[in-house]
Image (tube, rainbow, N blue to C red; front, side):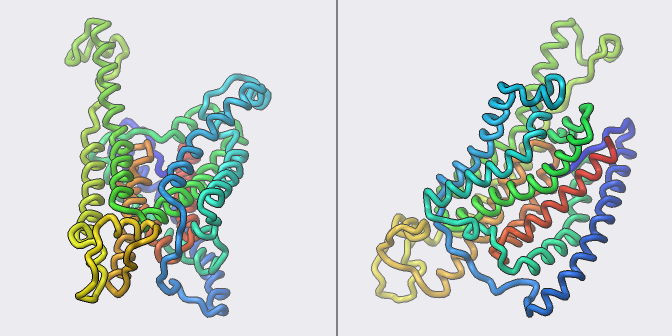
Length: 416
């Protein structure tokens, strides 16, 4: 969950009210975050820790296959869990009636979260011998990392919120599934579970998937891995456009069934038909532009390796000529023909890690089904990715993500 759009008849009032409500909820949480920063600052000071640790890159062993399997489990474990519980009559006993899949998904959130992490932990250890600490779930420097996440929330959130509201001025809004859920007649415990989903479950799950697994693998991936991620992100980012095209086609079929033309507004009003939904070309343009920047940066980084192979990283003039395939084997951790070394190799590793931040931020933003959330989630994803890259821990990103979602949930609850 990222943002909530308040429907009003007056668009200007809508945007102004939404911005004020978001900033109002943010101010309350920022005051609490500032108090937390001060409280943690004393403990961090006594421990002699700085705001940021010495830059380093944690060694990782998982591959793109494990990343894919983690995303597959995230998609299908809740589906199977809902199907089994529904067959047992679990939801009917809780609600006393048949409810929508969104309410069912919300009801099982406390069961889904530990089950997913248990499966993920088993998966990475079974396939590559990795532990959660290798991905970034570590208690090391936790006070300093929590303080850093609180500070990042205070600094980054206003800019992200303003960017999102500005984007709403130039495009139509596609609601998030949490907005659809809030429109139903929820019980009190369902609101509590929705808060848990937004502020705890979403922050933990998405940071594990995007900053931990995906970004941690991308910084070691070959150009092919980056291109696969770019393609998936483009497909995901095109969904608002494709859905709007489908909705407009359905609308045209409906008008044809009633024998009404689009310009006949009086007949549309008499039949209680809405105008045709606009085609969201801007979502397709935005997704294409972001993915193009990402792909262009990765190819520019790898171009010298395409030309010279591992010789690009070796300073000795008499070094043997090692091709591009050997370079890929080295990056992905397989047995190389020649080990690269020197400052050029170190600079390349950190540059690839920085483009991994862009890749994870692109995927993170474009996989959110709401629009235009992606416009603001790209810079938010860059901040989250940089925090993970700089600290080699998911803790600051989880704190920032959870508090950011708390702002969105506060707006959603107050508006509903």
